Image (cartoon, rainbow, N blue to C red; front, side, top):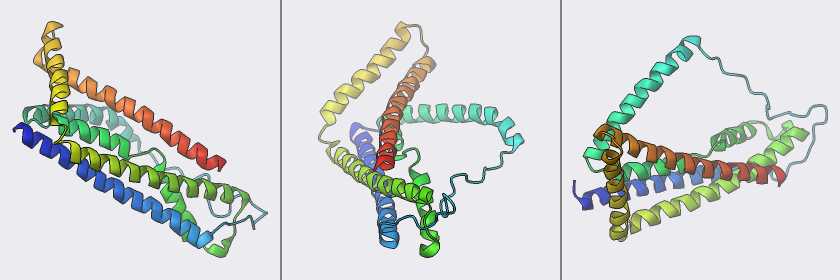
Length: 233
C-alpha cells in the first residue's frame, strides 16, 4: 500500500470516529433534554425514605466460577490474536490507522458515562408523580449535569476528529517525517540492543500501550472532573 492509501485510510478512520462521537453526543443531549422536559426542577416530596426512584444498591450480577477459571486462558489467547493482528497491520502499512483508532477508542469511551445514561433512563421510566426522595434529588442533579457536560465533550471530540481527518492529507510531510523517524528509530534501536525482528514488533506494541495508558489517565481525570462538578452543582 502506498503513502496516499495509508493516509486515506487514516483520514477515513478519523471520520468514522467523528461520526460515532456525534451519535454519542446526540444520545447524551437527548437524555439531558428529556430529563429537563419531564421533571423540570424537581423538589423533595417523599420524606419517609431517602430513595424512591433511584436504586443506590443495584442487584449484583452473578459470576460463574467456570468463567473465572477460563479468564487466564482467554487473556493469553487474546494476546496471541492481538499480536498476529498487529503484525498484519505492520505488513499492510496500516500502522498509522491502527494507532489513530486506538487513540480514538480510548478518547471515545469515558468511564461511568453510560452508567449515567442508564440511570437517567431509570428516572424517565418512573412515573412523574412517584415523588423524589432526598437521595433521588441529588442523583438527578448529578445525572443532569453529567449528561450535559458529556454531550459537550463528544461534540468537541467530533470536531477534533473531523478536523484532523480533513487536514491529515495536508499535513502529510509533517506526519511522514515524525512517523518515519519514530519507525526507523524503533527498528534501528531493536538490533542495536540485541532485539530480534519479533522483539522490535514488541517495542512498537509497548509504545502503543504507553500511549494508551497516557490517554486513559487524561480521560479518567476528565471523567472525575465531570462527576465532581456534577455533584457540586
